[in-house]
Amino acid sequence: MGRMPELPEVETVRRELDPWLTRRTIVRARRADAPAGPKYAHLERADGQRIEAVTRRGKFLLLPLSGGDELVIHLGMTGIVSYTKPAGHLRVVVQLSGKRKSTLYFRDVRRFGRFLVLPRGDRGLLPSLRQMGPEPLSEAFDAASFHAALTSSSAIKTSLLSQRPVAGLGNIYIDEALWRARIHPLTPAKKISRNKAAQLRDVIVEVLLASIAAQGTTINDYRTVDGQVGAFVEQLDAYGHDGDPCSRCGRTISKIVVGARGTHFCPSCQRR
Image (cartoon, helix red, strand yellow):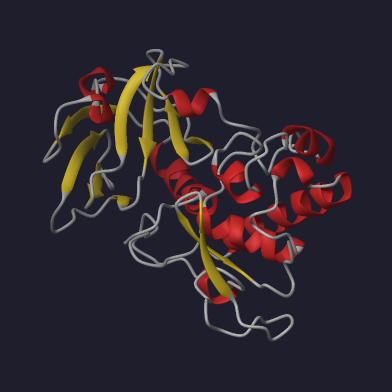
């Protein structure tokens, strides 16, 4: 089973795409071996429009276009954007102006990704974007607002997976942040104290910045635009370490299921 790229991986891809794509015109965007439907909607609308920027919201890449539309990319679990034609599972081909690296390819083995064009700001096909909380690397993600958003009686792991208290986190970085903050993943979100919320806010930012510096985490499928793997896997303390000794206290890391996701924690450091 693959795992979905999270904010550090998507931000790494964004930083690579931005200097390559910004101010270039899309000559032609079309589905290759991808089904018709909402995940690949209206690609032809991009033809003739200039890419004005490469931005990110949570785990989505958003490329505003000169004609008032927006190219939306979500990597799903196995999506890879590259300028080198892949051997298989090619879903979308975008031809660009200019001679150097003039074709963008979207490969997606498991077809959970999205690559579509919408009127800028239209979230009709993307309700998850409407409900998303603040960006964790922005000033809007402050300790007081974060604590105020933790109102759910569900587990803190489940609450963070919902993207509503803060955007962009998934299985890996939630496990890592909860381990660093010494919070049990089953703790009800509304039971997190103001001080603990402030600590959790700080370690979320810390973990994300460290992973971005390492170009993200590659477990299975994730690759950067130029085909590199993310090196943050070497810095993981909780995720994927079930059965290993905790690097902080030596107790064995446990794995349970929370919100239908495998969840890693230290039963000594992260007590309920």
